[in-house]
Image 1 (cartoon, rainbow, N blue to C red):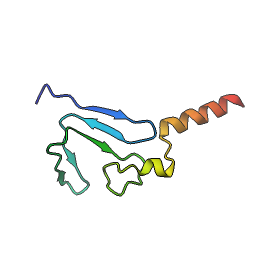
Image 2 (cartoon, helix red, strand yellow; image 1 turned 135 degrees about the vertical axis):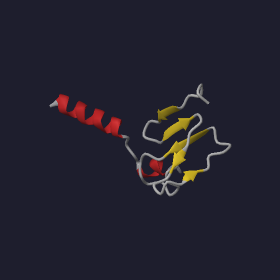
Image 3 (tube, rainbow, N blue to C red; image 1 turned 120 degrees about the vertical axis):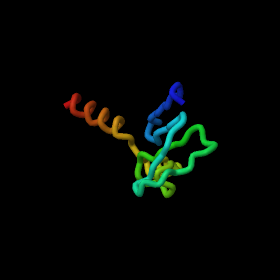
Length: 80
């Protein structure tokens, strides 16, 4: 698999979409079986009940991704 690529895309105010051949290891060192899954969405908001995977909770809680929040703070500071 030396030629295989992994692509990670940050979704606006949502999860990290990971595409490609990956190995996902939990905090206990156990590999999570991703067989048959060419892509997964990983939680960024911290509120998913299916961690490390996204379950859509970000949209229910109004999650603002860090890059969006930083940009808003910078705009507010520039307007002062």
